[in-house]
Amino acid sequence: MLIKFFIRPRKGVLDPQGRAVAENLRSLGFSDVKDVKVGKYIEVYIEDKTVEEAEKEAHEMAKKVLVNDLIEEYDIEIVENR
Amino acid sequence: MRFGIAVYPGSNCDYDTYRVIRDVLGEEVRFFDYRETKIENIDCMVLPGGFSFGDYLRPGTLSAHTPLTQAVIDYAEKGGIVIGICNGFQVLTEAHLLPGALLPNIHGKFVCKHQYLRVENDSTVFTNKTKKGQVLKIPIAHHDGNYFCDEETLKQLKENGQIVLRYCDKEGNVSSEANPNGSIENIAGIVNKRGNVFGLMPHPERASEEVLGSTDGLFILQSILSS
Image (tube, rainbow over all chains, first blue to last red; front, top):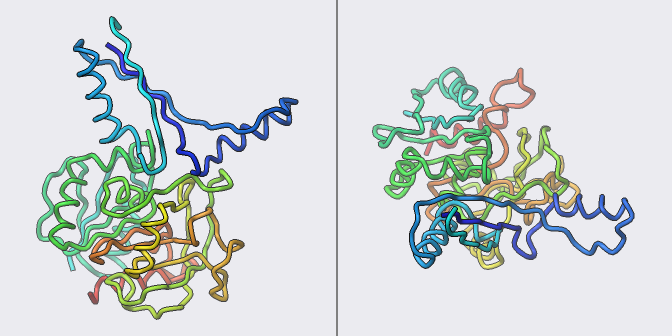
């Protein structure tokens, strides 16, 4: 079973990487770029359990270590049979 | 006094700090491995600078969840004196011993230079040898030193006198030009509400001998001795 974590800087929190990438994209001609956020993608493989149990565990992992909710926000995706 | 220095994989200012405490201050000091579970017979714990656990995930995060850091949390809760320097400051915020977070520098660059700091609170355990408004010259060396907190936390920090050091120019002016990393209100160092835990981005151990270009770091280290 796989938990996917999609982590990105919280709105209003400075993201120097995102800003630099946005400027670079614009300089390459993508003049429609309004904003860029650079975050993290984490895969955690766990033993099989119900999706509800996996979601609960995922949020605990996020709260305890994977995400700093002062500066980051996240989404999860549970993938069965992985 | 008996000092303890936390050593995580990737700490790299542990020996600098050890040398200053032993050879310059003339005090007792020992290292603590990150797997140790107890802190006993120690008067001050130092969390040194470096890139513990390679800054993986976020700076200080993985160190914050080690047995030794749990012992540091217990030690601080009993009133033990704790100082976190640079990466040590990041560990203290991730361990929730100090509020806020250290974001990447606003310009995206590593900054390494001597920096002027203004003392905002001279009555802490860590600054009792200084005077309010005094300007200290102490090096900084970091990529993630951009202090951030929410507005409510900032209000509390101000009301409780928890802002101890601010980045400033040579004359002591706190301005955006003198801010090396984008920190909110030029914050360089804060204490917890109780006043026994101090985190700062500048390195006092790198400003403790004439040969290093400044001895202003001793104002902070000697304050701890007289506390």
